[in-house]
Amino acid sequence: MNEGPSLLEPVEEPSAPFTNPEKRWTWERLGPLASKVALELFIVFVGVSAAFALDDYRDARKDDERRQAVYRALDRELTHMAETHGPMLQRQMIDQLSAWDRAVAGGGHPLPPTFRLPRAERAPSGVWDAAVATGSIELVDPELFYELARFYNRAESAGIVYQRYATSAQADVWSRLDEGAGAFWQPDGKLRPEIKAHVQRLRDFQQRQGQLGQEARLVRAKLRQAAAD
Image (cartoon, rainbow, N blue to C red; front, side, top):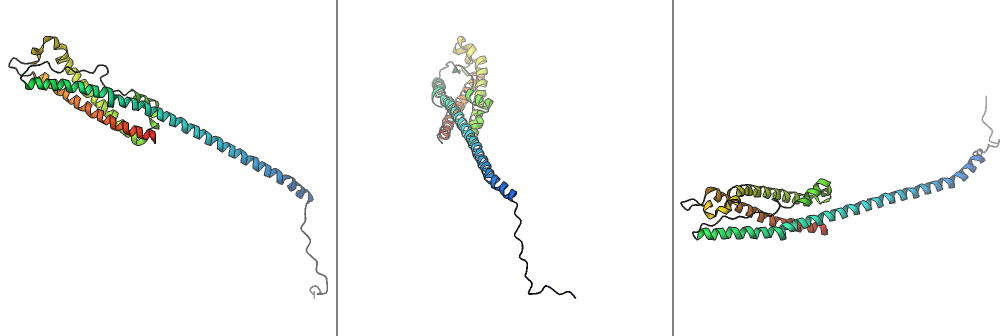
């Protein structure tokens, strides 16, 4: 029968863990090297991130400069309709229609109004068209973009109204002015139907163009506010 070790026998102490001198030497050499590599990688990461951030900043500045350029150009185009050419045309139409109404009310048989746009038959939209064609309009604030798109759509509609007026005016009025006032009145003293329609078309255009000028001022104010923000 085997008996366990005697209590008097010395107990062996656990041996110390084996230490490989070569592994300890390798870690002592690689530890600082790994730290250095990690530091260099961190520096590279920070540098690359900073470069991207700088590029983003430059791109944002370029976009802002382009946006401001679009705003300035649109502002000039809207000012043309709101403050200069638009109001001048309104005065001409109102003067001609007022003179016509006074003469007819007094029993006269005057020449019909002869208003015509001096150059283009539509409101100026070159800046808007260019901004849309080049994609620069995408830089504009979405809400402002909606307001501008609606305004220029109405400007296009006003141009169609003028073209209808001008087509009939060319056939019924402008080409017959050298015949004198009698060419536009019937023998019984009543206004010819086509001339009555001509005058009404001019009234319609005058009203539409006046509304367009008011809207141009409102849209321009929103444009300037967006440019200042």
